[in-house]
Image 1 (cartoon, rainbow, N blue to C red):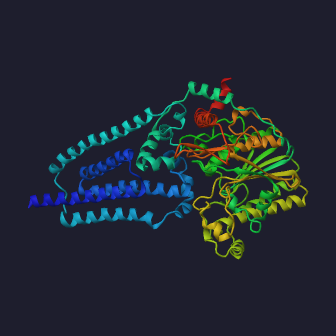
Image 2 (image 1 turned 90 degrees about the horizontal axis):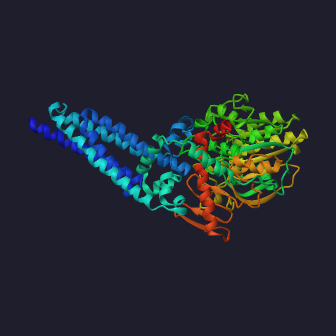
Image 3 (image 1 turned 135 degrees about the vertical axis):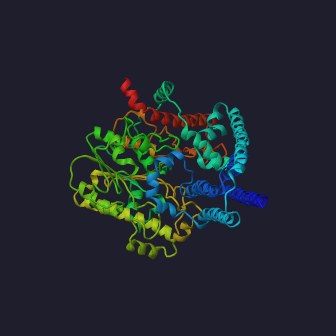
Length: 624
């Protein structure tokens, strides 16, 4: 009888082990890729399954596998959901820093979740519960301790094949390292693997488990930066181009500035009937065709950091607003305006704790920060409501001012009952576009809410004779997440709009009612905002402390980059997935010069990272 119980015990546990191994492998095949790197970690995952099941007793190993298995499932499925919304994968440091923001935006995140994503969690629960019941029905008592000790000791032997898998991975990495050289160092496969700049490309090449391991190494590493890095920064910054004065230098000298960082705005939102104020801004203002804001790890907070400092927020996934809010930045947008007698104030529809703005905005140089509470409004107030409060602040003042408004209505989710969507706007959209999908209609309605607020503000300023004295600087913070506006999107068929090169771009426009506008083509990013503003307002600044250029600089060929390694100028672009440079706009270019420029751009990211980690400007100034 005892032998039968022992045999039955082993058969049940073997069946449970096989079920879990099949689950782990199948889940991996759905959400990751195979390859020489990834297979090593899949083997380790399978060895871990065997070890956990046979080390713990049958009453406990089901619970252990449920907890560990759900965590494994959450990582793989969660990363897939994140990629759908952000077109990249999430770093551990980003998860740590922005957990509060993610939880606050959980409604938006759940909008991306499908039944297919829920199924693995339910399946794992069913497997663990089913085998728990099988054990209770057929076995009832735990295997005796004297029998468990030998196989618990045997489980420890699994360490050796797991270690062999890790050694195989390290050998592959070393082989990759040995292939990198010269120019090809910064654009080699090893550099892309080591720096993990393009998380999407990394996972597609090496797998999600490899990504988790490499990201974990960086998350727990203590990379020391010191005197050597300070010397590198000083040498690099000394070579930065001097401040440029264009033919438009001083065009807006003496005028007030009202910056609008529009949440999830892209050019596809511009409509002469539905968003007439935005249409006016982008048709009568100074508009930069080719301008786009990259979506970085910190999303909106990284955009406002770049807009205000012209420094790239590259810190291996760390959130700038939480990790570096005490750093010193000698050149900032509000700091420059303040030095010329303007009063810089920043506004946001949400609480100041979100993205740590209460502490970070003073660091950037703003004299005052009004969140929703400071404006006397509820959290996540629609843009039209915020604009109706803010407009009275400026309709009667004669003091020079610089305002920076971080809007909110455009934020996902894109559905009828979300912030910024009114019944009147909804009806107007369907009256013009009866076949439009709900998510596109919600996107337009949210921009209509912002448009109405800006329109009311401009009308009040005009009534008080103040409109000619202010320049509205409008740009989007990043593309609209979780909604498709690429050339294959149904949006264009449903609305009859034509897709253009910059339909999915965030746009940049300077609008002043007393200034004749024009369109100007230059590839650019939000890094170029500060130098361009200084050019237009006739402000002096230290060009050796920023990384952008005036978009009007004729010697500047333009520069756009993404978090995941894409790069382009007016004349050529680099695709990190193929490692190739190709011409743009039928232009010819010097390949050697382009490679040198690209190598400097890659180095620029490293320098920005070191500046932040060292608080270079703060410690550098104090040591002088």
